[in-house]
Amino acid sequence: MGGESRYEIHQDAYIKLVLHALKHRTSAVNGVLIGRSAAAGATVEIVDSVPLFHSQIGLLPALEIALIMIEEYYGEKGLSIVGYFHANERYDDFELASVAKNIGDHITRYFPQAALLLLDNKKLESLPKGKDRSPVLQLYTKDTSSSWKLVGSEGNNQLVVKEPSANIVLLDYISSEKWKDIVDFDDHLDDISKDWSNSQLFN
Image 1 (cartoon, rainbow, N blue to C red):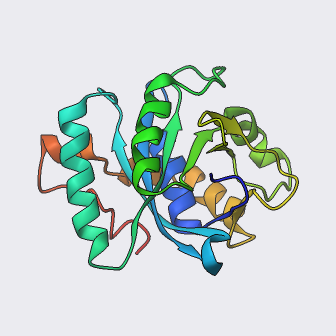
Image 2 (cartoon, rainbow, N blue to C red):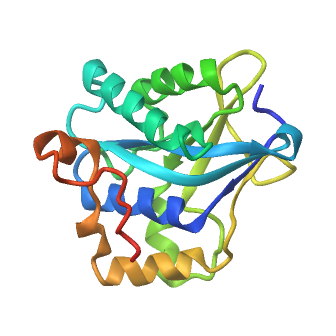
């Protein structure tokens, strides 16, 4: 299904989801990826990300409310939900959680090429030490057997950050504790004055 697509994530979308994971280091977090299909389906462009939850990440009513609001907000901009992002609670856990697979399955019903991104803590930790420009994320896509498979960095079906300097910018934001400013749907449901779209985050 999503086998032959290339996934291109914009810097703001990438940084936002990593900062969300850093803000809630001791709990699992999740979010959705916003974008469009380009180049006749050969490329999935991820232009934004929306942090969802850091407490009850599998809670269906809250998830359904969030997805409806997100689809309405971005639909007016000609964008839709094209994937899902997940960070595990335990630092050394590199397994794709069942809740991530379930939400990913839901998204593929509407967008078959959906990407499922899992935060790679080892890559994130080594970021300050190296010059690696690849994303600190693992890409999963659905194969023909309808199960989620980890995609390697070889070949066409890979995840790339649109701006090569994204990891350098990310390090700047981490050192200035920019993650404190991230708002997710959990925060918004507690206080509706908080902006879940994070529209002012990089201003």
